[in-house]
Image (cartoon, rainbow, N blue to C red):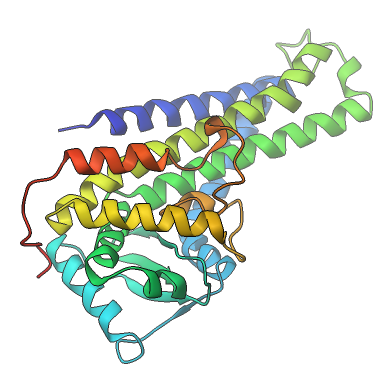
Length: 296
């Protein structure tokens, strides 16, 4: 059954695409709309094939073998079996701040990365809860959704920069009689340069927050008990507030299980993740009263 978060994600992606079309029209009329869509298609294709390599490289993650991290590999393998999906590649980040993320275009081309900090902080059940959450992201194609959202939002930002340059070199003084071709008016330029990119960013982050709730619930079902993940989230939130990640980038922040820049966000509207209290509350409400985890 389609969940409310899935419907919300579809609506938000459609709205983000609509903003892209609006940005293209404001910049270049009907021709601008076509160019914007083609440009986004190219960006999506590149992100589809290379997003996992880019994300892992930006995080300074190194792939580890079963002999190098036997317990971590065992947890990933058992949970992947429980989730009925291929085992992802396993990476470790030399980072004291505890966190984890998943990447890859589909379950057959995926990876899970954890920091050394999370390995030292969580017990086995809590770590399994985190891994189950990341496998849920992969199985739900959240990593692909995040890639598409980032590509569309990125294209909108680039169009806004083009409009800004056009305004600086006198583009805003042109007539837009020809079906709205060109930036045309000061109001249109301001809309494209300032308001449209902000709206795109807000929508992109809203998509990220919706998928986190979905991954929490799906991860709890894979594990067979929501409480270890709830406990892990509480520990991670407290630890990351004290020690934010050193090597995280804003572009990859939505991938992590908790906001790697926690404590620096001024408004929930611009947060990459939903409030940790809400996530924990939802997980605790799911409690089945079971202690026989599926991965054992």
